[in-house]
Length: 348
Image 1: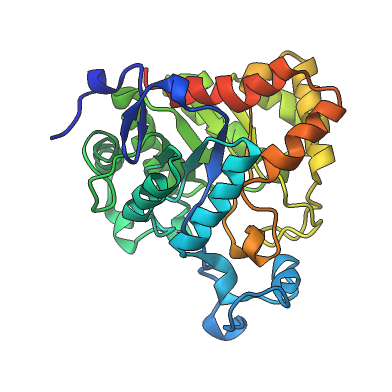
Image 2: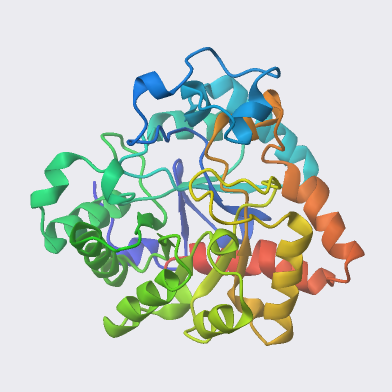
């Protein structure tokens, strides 16, 4: 039976049901436990098709060669093992934002949650235009709103599991009309359900501001709009602070990705974790502590520990100790890892 908004208010919705927000603990707000991120622009002949392993994982990570296996995470047993390491390091909850176009797997998320004892929160909506089903080209904003609301109130992706957040809603530069209709639908679904909204902005520095203005013009609660991937998008204080002044939540979610090379946009130099923390400190010094989230956005196989990467444990095992060494207080860390995620994941 479908839920109503009042059923959700004051609660968090996981793939196994509603829970008390106090049970969330430390949260990774942007991950992909299972995904198919195969780039639509890469032909099969442009990729190598042997399995990813410890001998070729660096080549894959640095874009020296493209491996088809790198773009798929699909083993439940491997994900369970990786999350067990996260749990040992102090992590408690994972938000999985694998939405339409990326191969969402709600039944597998539920199984992983049951096997690990960890709350898992599933996203809703659609990724960028190039990954969407061709049928979406003919759909209206109202159609997307009905679908996203239904994924939260009733069921999602052909399974009984329900989503607990909207997004990541895909945008790009230039922003397509189809993506704008999905965003219109997402904002309407947010108003109908009381969920938070996570946005994947385009990779040019002014596109997050464009998204923020679009949301504000439609009356969105800006403190419940999350702009992801800012660490690959904005590299100057003026642009960052102008975005922060809109009231949106700013997510630095590529922690652990410390190679300069960033395959979705080779024109930038990706920062390392130390530089990411310097940007967080600048935001905090300007009064934006309540607007900060961090995560890994693991979306390729080579970032899992099994394949030579950092895994879901990295922030808890390595980044939080680094934050303490760099002068972040326990109150600041708790706000970023516990209190702000809890506020956003609680339906209003």
